[in-house]
Image (cartoon, rainbow over all chains, first blue to last red; front, side, top):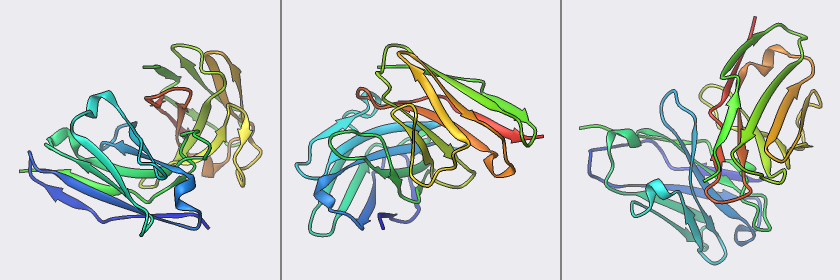
Length: 120
Length: 107
């Protein structure tokens, strides 16, 4: 069965960077893309971006351009999302979500979420 | 960017009630719309995609409809386990965007 297992919670200081991993299993990794979505405490869902696991092409939310990178390691079927220059408003649960394939980016299978707290 | 306006932001209904949530897109999205259910502390779960296609394993009391810019999610007979927050999302164009969410409570 499809599984996405994310790395554990992180506490970071303002200005630092965080790198969250999402290890995929149960499907052919290169055939699907991965979305990243975050949710600040008590708030709604915010799409951050998407990476094509085959060729590494990415799309990012304009609000995060320049601060976010997404990469893949096909040898371990893992996707990474790194967010830099963290501020308090980056405190959120970060989710990875596999898309439905064929370039359709909607999230179908979701990871369990990774809590990132930004605090001095 | 396509803005998704979801309403109502919250509702309270009784078990057995028919509940409808609407989502309006700021431009046409050609049925590229998904509905998600999220319970506290959990990841979202997809209920419907392509506006009206039921995701595998999802109860048939959930249904979706709409076209163009107006879409809706209906729960035909509300059950206690349907207490959750529901989100719409358009995937017609990047950036993908979510509605603000509808919190459904059971009276």
